[in-house]
Image (cartoon, rainbow, N blue to C red):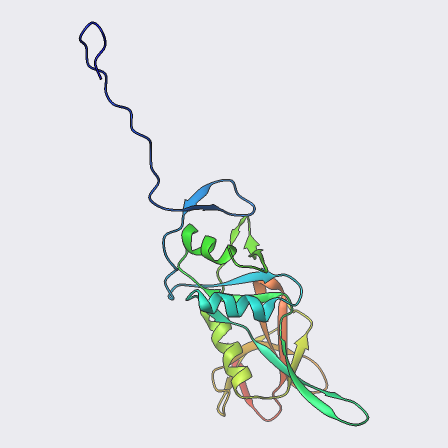
Length: 202
């Protein structure tokens, strides 16, 4: 384009955005969201709406996110029948494995039923992989277990021998020997009776 005096004016072009944008529910900083998160990385805890644990887990798996939803089987008895159902061990929580990046977390937050990540000092807090591995092993063995009051103190022990060899937790003092496995960032614990197992300090 030329002005009457003969000088040239640079052509103005509209600015285009090549990737969609999203924001965290509790943050105003936008992040680019281009692809699903990598299946490797640390574990995190996602808080869900009431009774949305299974739905959230299913949706995240459909997005390619590695998910762990620990379930506990309970038998409900009526006068004429009984039924065994699977319920989330930790109500309102799902574990996810992600790369520690803003786009990966945003991908999870854009899921129906997700309320947010469990945070410590304002940031999503990773979980030691050992805690997830121990919990998985415990549930795989199908031993009788139940929720237990969260413990911050007590002797940490390790099981020697048997199907639970190497499993670590807090030894609770009671009439029976009980091992308590804790997920510290959400203050939830699972207790399993360990009578007959040999223990050693962890």
